[in-house]
Image 1 (cartoon, rainbow, N blue to C red):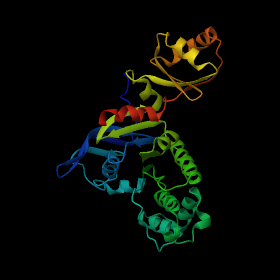
Image 2: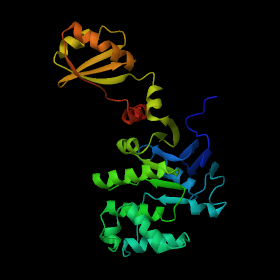
Image 3: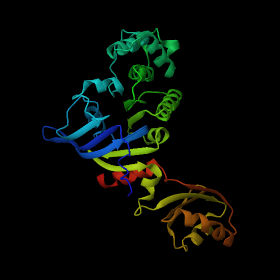
Image 4: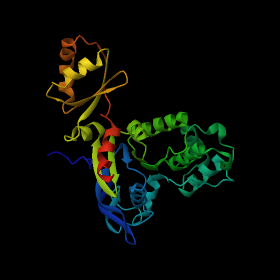
Amino acid sequence: MTLDPAFVPEPTVAIDGVTKWFGTKVAVSDVSCSFGPGVTGLLGPNGAGKTTLLRMLTGLISPSEGSIAVKGDWPRAKPAIYRDIGLVPEENAVYAEMTATAYVRYAATLSRVANPAAAADRALAIVDLRSEADRALGGFSKGMRQRAKVAAALVHDPGVLVLDEPLNGTDPIQRAKLIEVFRRLGDEGRTVIVSSHVLEEVERMSDRVIAILDGKLAAAGDITAIRAAMADIPYRVRVETDHRRELAAALLKDSVVHGVRIADSGLVVETEDLARLGADLPGVARSVDARVTVFRPEDASLESVFRYLVRGRR
């Protein structure tokens, strides 16, 4: 029996038929999925319902319908579970007058960590903020404040880490370091749920994706499997060659080619069978004396998944 890709075999977080409405607005509609150890990307455009889902997961708000369990219980029903949850909210609010050290120690104290000072020092080291630890948060850049928030979420060593748009405002170097941290935490066996509307971020952070669109579960699984399931959406392949027009005409005769567009120094080829096109291309190129220097699928990635999900909304 094949497991539904929206679910994992031994979940630490289980969401069952969850709906949330605010007045007449439905923010999340009948979502069922689960999360386990490792990094899972929660993908969706702004306003898709990601933040609402994460707030329900962490017990900040209640579902209108359905149920959520973190390690067997909903946090609001069993507050002890909060000790094993770390949350980085999307909101940028911090205590501006506090130093980074004081802020993270405060989080440790609230979580009843035995040695708040040592725990804060470890958490700040993880996000590479020890050298700035005695500066007030009000003087930090947005990216540095994000790192301080991550340190505060990690200070009590949680098994479940919930990150809502954690890379907002970070520069490329900070972003790379935090992505490395998240992946390492997942490799350690923690359940890391990372929400983002930035496709590249999700693809770099996680192997498994839960995609939310208009408050509903739109797709789930690893990126390659989701793309392979899009049988009605042809692959696009970049082919660079010294004989563009001749190769384009020859490729159009191949039964697996849906279309060819000449672009810049190469071609964009649409095909229903990526492997077959790769096998056919050398022979087709030889037939027109063309030299192929690049063969690169352009959309066997999260970008194509996202286009597929949103195409019906426009």
